[in-house]
Amino acid sequence: MVRALVFDFDGLILDTEVPVFTAWSEAYARHGQRLSPEFWTSIIGYGADHFDPLADLERRVGRPLDRDVLQAARRERQLELTMELDVLPGVREWRREAVERGVRLGVASSSGRSWVTGHLERLGLDGWDCVRCGDDVARTKPAPDLYLAVVECLGVAPHEAVAVEDSGVGVRAAKAAGLYCVAVPSALTAGHDFGRADLVLPSLAELSFSDVARRVRR
Image 1 (cartoon, rainbow, N blue to C red):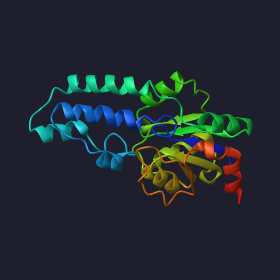
Image 2: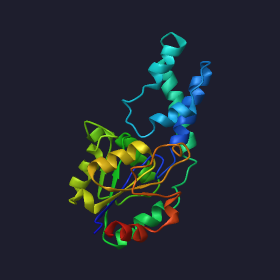
Image 3: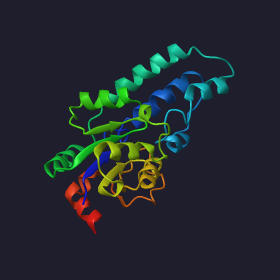
């Protein structure tokens, strides 16, 4: 029986990964450097400690940069692009159906809590029973810590929960924690390895949450 539904955030609820890449790519370009989208896709899903764009850019240009100025411009551009986005298809419907079925709702994101909760509140996506972010665990994805923290918070066993992820790293984390995992590749993660996912969908609008819950019981 499915008792919990746990969403990733970036690229799954809101396709923030494109604005993040675009803002960093433009910052690199202003310093005469190119940020490869192929490389960027390889780091999606990891926590902030996995790759430091500022350190990488300083290494490339061979000198220290005014990090405060660069970060302020990058954040402003990233927010500008993110504010233009809408919730991805199927997310609201899956949430609504889960609530109707008495299924508890969680979020497991490697991003910072202020980033995740700020956008969820702005989008009117409240009512989560548990939100765990990169700030809350010692190890972010692909370690299972975030998912283990969420299911413990929700009071369910891992095998009673469904995770929804957009990255190969996220799928690895969910499966390592023992959850059934649905993968929904985003624009930047389509090339990831989703071989460990239990189900891969082009969009959450493709199937209802009830359809997936029935598959879990088989």
